[in-house]
Structures are given as structure tokens and as C-alpha cells.
Image (cartoon, rainbow, N blue to C red; front, side, top):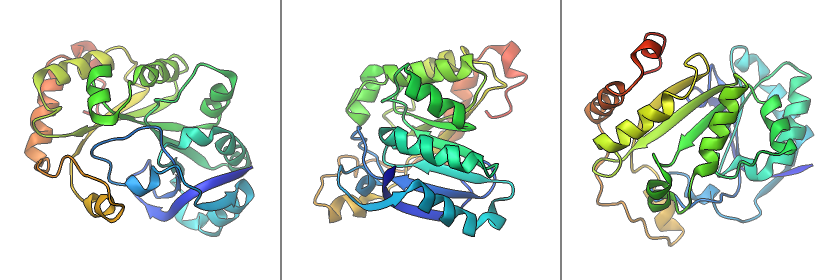
Length: 249
């Protein structure tokens, strides 16, 4: 099986537990207005690598990943789910911790996705909105399937991390906070973590270099205070019995 690879980062500390080898796959089904890696979203053929080539490359650096592992990101990695299945099957033979960073929007309740879930130790699910309307406005697609993926992961007691990119004046309001809290209240707090990420403009040059219009250039970047205020609003609507065990937020 051959994967369409955008790039590889061999020393990441932000894409899962420990130090990670991050494989960015090419192509995405969404059109996020705030995407900081827009060149990886294009449906183009980039670097072609077999699963064996990725495994060999990972093992060259394995001493760095004693408490980490490999994370497959994108773009949208689940567009290449068959490649991930082969890759993770081979990595599991070496006892490697595996993670996938995804929007979850392409998820379907099928056997092939069941196999992906079984081989993945951690899902990092990027929440594109608190509901389908908000997600469509920000990413060009509904996210009903994201919620289905989260429900599935929770039902299997799989580990997952939900991330929310905070855009000041767009998705930092009380209604969004309440909707996210209601989502979190559905899940076992032993299964998930929740993290708010501040909107930034580090990827604007990529848009301009590709001749693409960046619609959010007027938007200010989120501050630590913005993040703290939003988390306070989320906490107000959390189940207090579960909150005692929720260390992530």
C-alpha cells in the first residue's frame, strides 16, 4: 500500500503524548477558513511512500520515541485509511504507540473504520464547530460524522482528545461553550481530554503563495486570556460529578 505523503516531522511534542514522529498525509475533504497547513489539504499527488518505508524511517529515530510514538495527521488522514491500517499493523509489531489527528468528518460505521479504531491508541479529533451550521460556516461541511466517531470511541473506551480552535468573535461565545459542554457531558471522563487551541495567523503566507484568498486576515489572534475565559464558560455547564475527575480542562 502506498501513501500520499505531504511531509514528515521527526521531533514533535504537541501531537500526542511524548515525543512523536508525525506523518502528514496529503489531501483533505474540508475547507477550513483558518487552516494553517493549507498546502497539505490540496488533492494533489505528492511524495509517495509505502508503509514499509515509513516504518523503516520511524525506526531510525526510535530512540527518541521511547515515551512517544507516531501520529498520522494531514490534511485528513482518514481519506487514506487503508494505508493507515497497513502502516499501523506493521508498527504494532514493534510495540509503537499510534495516534491519528482527524476532523472525523469522513467517518462511517463500517468494518474498515472499526479496524482503524482497533489499531489506534489515541484519536485527536479537531472539532470544526459546536454544531453542523457552525462547522459548515467555518469548514465547508457538516460534522455529524464527527459526533458519531466520538460516540463510537467512547462506547469502546478508546482514548481520544477533542480540540477546539478558538476564533475571537466567531466561536468564543456562550452558546458555543454550552454546546461543547453538553457534548463533553456525554462521554466518560476517563476516555477523553479537551483542549482549546488559540487561533493564529502563522499559515497565511501559505495561502498567499498558492494564490488563495484568506478570509480571516482581519481576525485578531486568540490570547491566553481568551482561552481561559472560554474554558470558564465551558466549565459552568459541565456535569459537576464528572468534573471532579476531569483534569484536562
